[in-house]
Image (cartoon, rainbow, N blue to C red):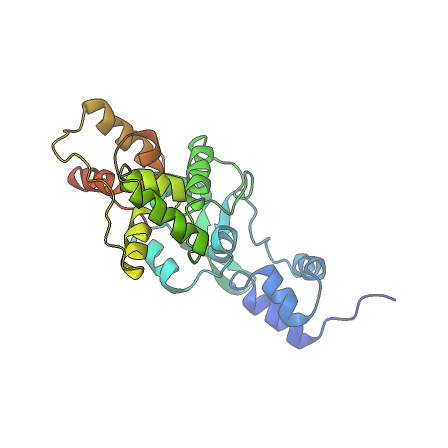
Length: 250
């Protein structure tokens, strides 16, 4: 049995939504396979959602990085930061696209605004050499949990505090929770004990400052930078702000 014929309404929907809704989303709506949608789009002369050469659609970029279409506050945040978006006419429809050469130039200066943990090499076509390091940094940061705290974690947190020898940095690394998350959990549990205070009179060494800047500019978040030097993420954020670098997800 051959595949069922496409109705005029389905053809119009495909043409209208191409570039704005993911291929999977179109297939789900039309109750057709992803391959059937791709074949029909090709016969209609619709350019691939991403050719990973000259340009990628905004929708495809967002589907790659976080599984959503290119709308909402995340899209506005990138637009406000100057991500280079253009319009390409496909048949009679204009779609939002990003030319890859312009994207890489912009992204290299705004590494903390896009998270690549859900991507793999080749998803975005040719990649500059620094992208592998950025992806590694995002995967490392993703190890710091955002899930609800478990009773076991609560007990471990209390144990670390009761030892009276760990600061926020040490507890953060052991629990794989950010320092901010640890502070909030201590407040929620009404824990009176506090981690050891950092030595605020210990000046930053030039090599530490250069290490922080280097890792930050490569795309590492402060919680991961703290694993490389004996400073808290809070102290690292303060240093970056003083040097007008800090822009983590803002």
